[in-house]
Image (cartoon, rainbow, N blue to C red; front, top):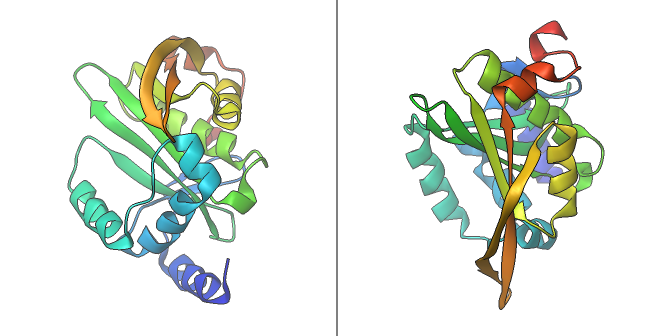
Length: 198
């Protein structure tokens, strides 16, 4: 992070309210001021390749975040360290309360990848979805070559359901997409502390 980003993060941490906790991270509602950080994370070439999108302008991200604030089918959170340092964005999207289904999305700050924070944040989000919301099934979709995401999803209990062959175009190539899910019964069988037990 640059010095300005650290100062912005410090100011933001003064007003952040962590509404949910994992073992090593907290989740706080996303705020409009988070657009700069998220834009930087999504602009990282590794993240852009693994997630399969190209970065859009900062102004378009801000507009989307404003629109999403009133979207009752999604919940977006900033992933925070105990000192309130923001290290990622995680979301529960496409929520269908009647069917009890939703999709998970996550992107982490490059310097915090590979340190188990992503798994902890995903565990916390699944505890929220199954412990506080009436979800029955969570789904995640990623490229079959995105080993980092597949590892995080596997550690969080997600089961590989199948592959959507040639489902997306990225960098001039057709890529397969892995579909993973976690069902309520599978979450209940996980032998780990829940967020409210930490």
